[in-house]
Amino acid sequence: MNNPQETAAYQTAPAGLLAGKVAFVTGAGRGIGAAAARLFAREGARVLLAARTEDQLKAVSEEIRAAGGTADHVVCDLADGESVRAAVDRVVDRYGRLDVAFNNGATIQHPGPLDGIPEDDFDQIYAVNLKGVWLAMAAEVAAIRATAKAGAIVNNSSVGSLRANAELPVYGAMKRAVNSLTASAAATYGPEGIRVNAIAPGFTLTEMTRAWEADSPGIRERITASSPLRRAAAPEEVAEAAAWLLSDRSSFVTGTVLRVDGGALA
Image: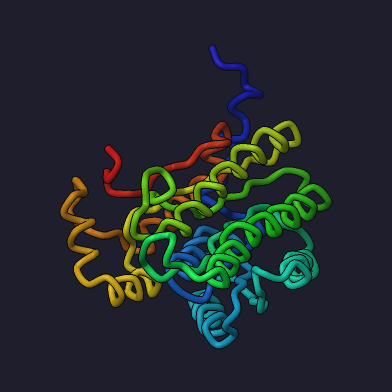
């Protein structure tokens, strides 16, 4: 028989996956991040959206509020530590706490072999896709610890981090490092009640992958042809996985990289 204390978090979870929680989402102006912000608000969270482009953030925030949700936004450059810390501080200033965070923001490389990538491009991909996640996690852990006391973080990785990635080698390498940070953080902060997981999306219909397609014609068809579901993901489908991992419904899940890839690695 289960110990009642062990299942209390699950049994007392409210109807909305994220009801009563304050959520922080990076890269929230478009794509998976915008889909996640909309979904988190529908599931009951108060959401602070962060990204570099204010007009995109404003549009998504206004859309959420028009639908009856609670959202605000802050301009944030993930490559800048001060900017990241200020954005997380803004969550606490605006809503009084931080419960959950989705570190989704990223930049993509120009497709091609690793010896063809300029050093400046490498540095930028590192600064946003790895250092930016580290900066955000550090600030988020501090904010959760100081306010909500317990919570959850999800990092957006990539199925391309779990195998060789000849098309996007530096992007894949940074995402693989994110997986390592995720596991280490889960082990470090689990005793405090802070869960840390990652999701690894397959090919998803976003502005980023459209840019990839423009540089690599036919890439979508080649990838989806080898996937059991034979299609790309919608951003909303990826956001659903992040919402579940951030919710109390996944209260015994930490340190995992959840593939949301249509079976691409099956």
